[in-house]
Amino acid sequence: MSYMPEPKSLDHLLAQVSRLHHERARAQFGALGLHRGQPPLLLALQEHEGRTHTELADVLHVTPATMTRMVQRLECAGFVQRQPDPNDQRVSRVFLTEKGRQTAERLQALFRTLDEETFTGLSPEEQATLHRLLLCVRDNLLRTAHFTAEDHP
Image (cartoon, rainbow, N blue to C red; front, side):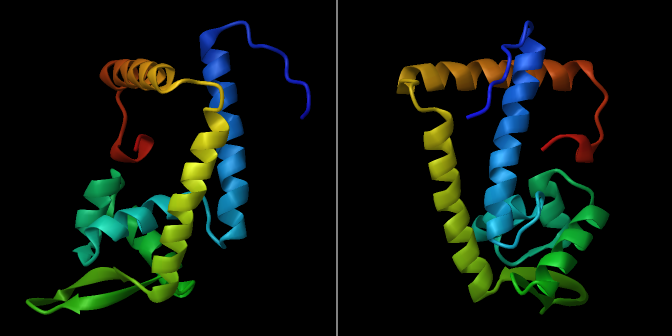
C-alpha cells in the first residue's frame, strides 16, 4: 500500500476516502465490463424490472435524458432489453437480460466484498454511527446547496 499523508481537515479526509473507494469500485466495475454509472441501474432493475425510463430516472435521481443514454449503452452491451409497453406503444419498459441478471448478482457480491474491505476494523456499532453521521453531513449539504437532480444520487 502506498503512503498517503493524513489530511488536516475532515473535508479533505472525506474527499480522500471517497476517491479511494470510487477508484476501487471503478476497477471492479471495469472487470465486469461496466462504467461508473451503470452498476446502480443494473441493481435498480433487479428491484424495479419492467419500469419505464422515466420511472427509472426517478429511482436513480437522474434526468430522463440521462436515463435514456444509460439504457441505450447497457442495451448495446447486452445487459438490458427494452420492450414496448403493451398499453402504450410509445413507451418502452426496461428488463434485464440473462447477462444483466448474472452481472447484477456479481455486483451485489462485489459490493459486499468492498464493504467488508472498507469497514474492516469497525464494529457494527461504529459502522452504524458512521452511517448516521454521514447521512447528517449529506443532508446538510443537500439542504444548503442548490443541486439539480443529476448532482446527487
